[in-house]
Amino acid sequence: MEVWNRWRLENPQIRPNLRKAKLQGKNLRDFNFNDTSFRRVDSNRSDLSQATFRRADLRRADLSDSILVGAELTSRKAELLKTISMEDLMKEFNMTS
Image (cartoon, rainbow, N blue to C red; front, side):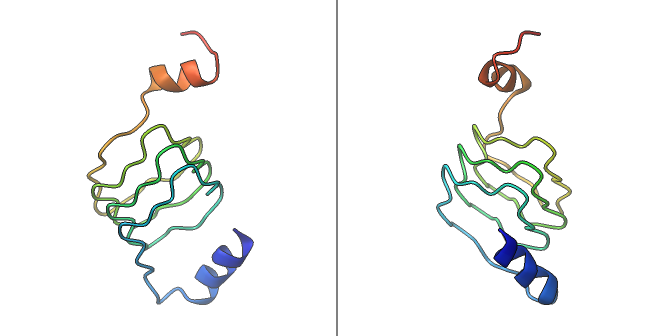
């Protein structure tokens, strides 16, 4: 994460293209995905806590069953396939409503 985030800070003019990347079940906590094409990325069951997606292209990204606590999803384009519901999130952490 530190290497990626440092590279992002040093290269703000570059817009990474992660289109169709397979990132299922990965620990992507605190990653800087600002201005990144996350289009059609499969990151289900990943930990995206505290990750930032400012101006990211999230069209058709699969974030199902991912942990998004504190993630910043301020996106220009967002057409998500699935997201975890609050009910499922509460079940995941054994909390009752």
